[in-house]
Length: 132
Length: 70
Image (cartoon, rainbow over all chains, first blue to last red):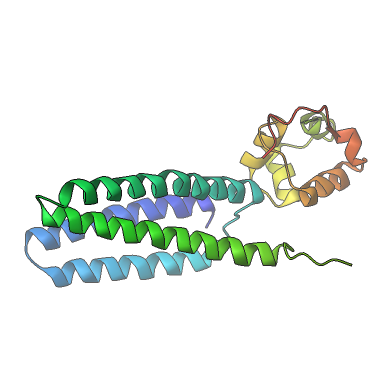
């Protein structure tokens, strides 16, 4: 199976699973939704293991840039969002304040992951200073 | 940075798909390299040079413009 066929299969499975999940929610059958999601994941992972997927260097570069952009946009956005939610939710609405706190911790968590990743990746790619 | 990949590919009578298969990359990557939108890695540059049996500097020309660098 080629990458193109795998992507087509993935879309079909996603549509089928989402229709089953929505049916499960409508008919109040949570088991149906759960089974649909688990079966979908298992099926796709089985198909993926059979597929020769070429992720070449250009695609890797695109993914790296996309991740970088996601971090650069998302972290300041939720950081500022949490600041405003904490500022305005402090007096009147306690749940908005709580939401602000959650977002603030999420921002800190993301910054922590970023810092740890930079530390280890820097080491991996020879960033240690060895003076000879 | 610009390159003559398309020129040498056509000279060897190869399609983008064939060159992509020979180099182990996708056709989109070949398209991006030929249109100077993607600067390949050093490893891929060597593979391309080996494929065309030419020195790297005959295929890739550094003109001091970094606008398309990755």
